[in-house]
Structures are given as C-alpha cells and as structure tokens.
Image (cartoon, rainbow, N blue to C red; front, side, top):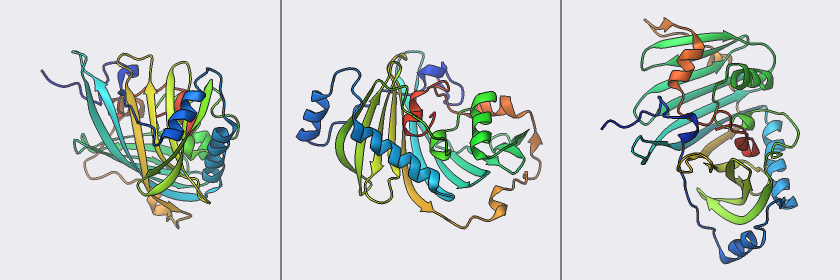
Length: 280
C-alpha cells in the first residue's frame, strides 16, 4: 500500500505525531508534577517567552536554519514521519525569503518582495505570485490569514506585541536542558486543543532552539517539531536575496492552489503555535 504523501494531507488536523520527551532531572519532574493543576501560569515561564519574542522583534535582520519533522497518519492508523529543512532569511521592515528542502528532494522558495509574494515549486517548475502591501508583519498576516497558508514559526518573524500565549490555560517552567550544546530554559504550555513545548537559550541572546507541538485532540495525538540552528543576527543581506527570477521554462500558475498542493499537512488553524512564534 502506498504511503500517504505529506503534500496531500489525509486530514489537516492529522498531520503531526505524538512525541514524549523525558524531563531532564528529578527537580524538573517534581516541579512539573507540583504544577499540574489546570490554570497554572508560571510568571517565570511567561517572562522567558516574553524575552524571546522581544529579542527577536528587535533584530532587524537574521538568518536561521530550521530542521523539522511531522507525521502523517496513514489510512491504517500508523504515523509516518516526513520532514523538511528551511532556511529563513529576514530583513525588516518588509523582506523575507524561505528556502525549503523536503526529505524527498523537492525544493521550494517563498519570497516576500517589496510589492508581491512569490512561491516557486521545483518539482513541477511552477511559480505563482500575489500582490502585497504593508510591512512584513502585515504581509505575514495576509499570507496566513487571507490566503490561508501555512508559514512555520510565523510568529517568530513578526514584531506584534501582546499576550501570544493567551490561548494557553497552563504555562509551566519545566527546567533547564541543553539543545545542540546551548543551555536553554524549557517551557511547556497547554491549551484545549494543543500542547506546546519551547526551549529558549539562556543568557543575552534568548533565541528559540527547539519547539514541539502536540495536537492532542487530533486522531493519534500527532506532532510537529522544529529545531533551530545556525542563527546569524544582523547580517548584511543584499537586495538580490529577495528578488525572484523564474528559471528557464517555469510556468506561472495561480498561487493559492500551488501553495496548498505544496505545503505539508499541518493544522493551519492552530492557535497554540503562537506561544512560541506562530502556526507550525
């Protein structure tokens, strides 16, 4: 039997898979256990999230690589993991580029130019465009809202203030952990539909290092995870990075069906991912 293709979701909410992470130490386990009541919102955990968001919003330009995985629930009930690598390049106030490589070798490029959004899919050598207005925050809101498209970790790219974790009825400080050699504060959030974990670097640069989202009301409690590496801050990024030139023979098609065919299955309506930076 052929496996379900990650670019053709069985259902939007059955895109990711359950993943259990052991707590790093007895002290952390005890802390989590003592804060098990619904409605706990740990001030230190909230402070960690706020520091992360404020620091990212202050960066005028950055580049980061995100390795991610997501499981697709197959018709017979088994979860099969697929994944991708994304290189995200941002320059405020209005430019963004995302180069994605799926594990099957498919490559795609999403570019927020000065006055349009462009998406290119190498598999079929097709691209689509959509006009855009406003700064990067407004363009991302248009992309994920009006176009209804998925942009992993979208909230990490915006400067919007406010309680991004308002959806969570429980926010806990789990403890400390080391991700790729980086000491981190581990925060866990829980809402009605999703659970989110985020690991934030300690010290003067509170950058997110890892994120896990569990869709606990979806069949099989599926999961998305993303691990960040190679953060480059305040990089000098030339204008040409955000200029798309279609390759020879590329066919222009409507952007919305192209994006919907290309994007991995994910819970596009998820509010939980905004806790650590936006929908998955």
